[in-house]
Length: 317
Ligand SMILES: [Zn+2]
Image (cartoon, rainbow, N blue to C red; front, side, top):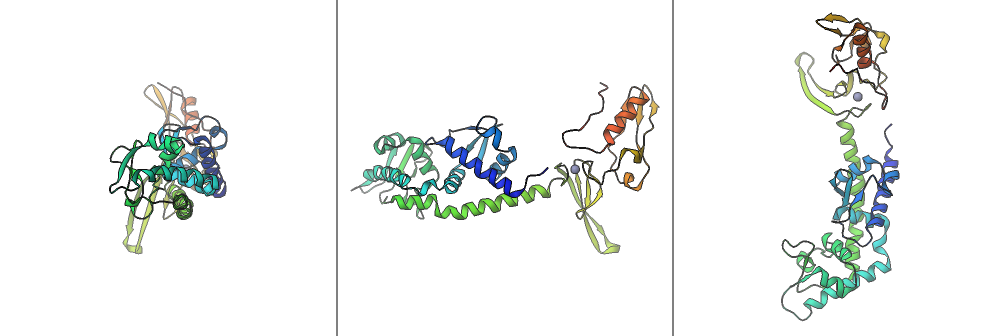
């Protein structure tokens, strides 16, 4: 039911590759990826998008629409190895040369609009946007690199007077330091996953709804109880009351279903017959317009559950 870690990492790599391909030379902030459309719909798991968003590699613009963050773009380049190619270095060289011309022989930094740099370098605006946005054109001392001017992100570039970056610096910024980034990505995704596991039922993924610690002074012990939305209750990790999706959940025969008349309705609260059935957290009383309907609804509420095959009690209203 849950996807293995290696499969998930493969799926993340695949998502990065598809996004980088779809992005081309467009700006990361305006290029949206629709997860319900090709090429993403078939191969990329919804959980992959959620994990990448939690890691800060993509952000969700609207339900189902994502875009790469600067961090995500760097991670994608790192994974693909694109930035290390000679062709990429040449392109970066053209952009840097265009920038350098503005401060050559000057005593002050200059502000130039993105469009102008783009046409002078002969490189697409999106490509330059991504380099400035990811701060790949800034290494170490921020004053030496090109940055957005003031609040004009994506429009005006400030080129410092001592701007003297070489393509190799930028490529290094795009790649080598991000080797740790990519390791951090994997570790981070693992942490996210562990956290997720920690706050969700291990059988059905229902959310943790409450946690409390109870002191038992006579036993010199403090026990942490955690209740999940599906009904699972754990005490220091041990399952006290079962999840309806787990093997610990009793069979229907372990309950007695006998509805009683209550005004114009019938109400059925199953009566546990076995020790295992007694551990079930009371779900709720089932109601029906007839005795049979109330009892059938109670069976639906208390039967062992299988993902995707859940039944619902009949609607009375
Ligand atoms: Zn559960």
